[in-house]
Amino acid sequence: MRKRNSFVGVIILVCMTASMPRRDLNAADKPGPSGILGRRFVDRSFGFSLRPFANAKINQHKIDDPLGGYQLVEFVHLTRPWVLLVHLNRSNGRIRPTEYIDGLRAYCAVRHQGVETLGKSERLIAARQAAVWNGRYRQASGSWSIFEAAVQVHPDEYFRIILKVPTADEGMAAAVFDIVIDSFEMLHSEVNAERLEGALLLGRGLLHPTDPVNLGSLADAEAYMMVSRSGKELGYAQIREYAETRNGQPGLRIQERGWLFPSDKEFHRVRNDFFISNDLRSSMFEMRVLVYTYGQDGRPPIIAEKIERGIRENDKLILSYTEELGDTILLNTVLQVTGTYIPLGLLRVLPRIVPLEEPELYAFSSYSGVRKDLVLRTFRVLGRPAPQEGVSPDYAFVVQDTEGITPPASTIYLDEGTRVRRIVAGEDDLVRSSQARTHLMYGARVTEAKAKLKQLGLPAD
Image (cartoon, rainbow, N blue to C red):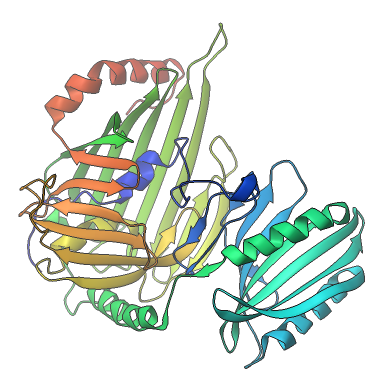
């Protein structure tokens, strides 16, 4: 392994901006026709996109499906009792779309009373064989209508797109469902699948070296990154790395401390900690975002915090987290990890491990705080950037970090010593800076913010 200098890593970008109000980075540039559809939703891990109905709350927690598979995403209308779901299911053997949809109708009849089929047809969706049915059923809350499409991915694998609405909205919902399924697109091709298989093999090789890596020896000096959104500077992140032994396991500790000031009415304090043992069998992360909103008209301030912790021991990832910003109840779950799992903290040291001169693609499974589950993560080495206007001569190498294998990606620019100079992801931009500049720009505001937290008996650092 080559000894390299500091790599801050894209986790900073995720953690520093996660709590801030923002336009969805998966979104298209404009809403759907006549405001019926919302912005395009892109799932880069499972390889699909669509445009849900407008005015929807999105839940991406992966949930087991009793039919064999998962619910991938749920869109809940904010003003109507409408729910749109996308599932990925496996069938029992090779089965045609019309036969599969018959099985779905039968399953609906088992779960609900008075199921009535109103229509059934075959069609192409996203250039794939598919079948669609719609019907009605009864439950305690009244009469409901269901619209369901099954899109064949492989002979034994289907995407299911499901819309459930009160029967009183059936006519309007039928038109919306037709537009939604017309917007459905597949992102992964057979060529991509072959490339991904090779990338996973490369990733597994990095995670299981013949000799354990002394990660602590890679720790480098303190670093600072200025954080901007849409060209407006919001604050900064401070990153420290050092060798540490945890529970008898030597490894690398990474600490991130950040302050963001999105407006004069609030500030955000970010505290993230990561540990990775040399043998990669033990790791931990804790990510905390506190949002302080100043009280108005004599009212007290509002304090809200989001917490996420994970401990990896052997093949288990033990999680505890708050569901939303401001929640006080910690939820718990345990995930099974495989040989492709990469700890969050290890992502930032990849440029110290992999060759950077030639393009290459590496793939891993990684934890996603959005899904509360493991997702596909790819790390693409692009080599040296071509000289062009607007690209700093200090940028010696370019790499990209992506959920899944399709854009958008976080683009990371490194210098000859593999120090991160800049990270760009959509409207977010992190640029390497210095302690002197961050103190000049934000020292007074941070001092005031710390005093506010101390008045409330909260940790200031």
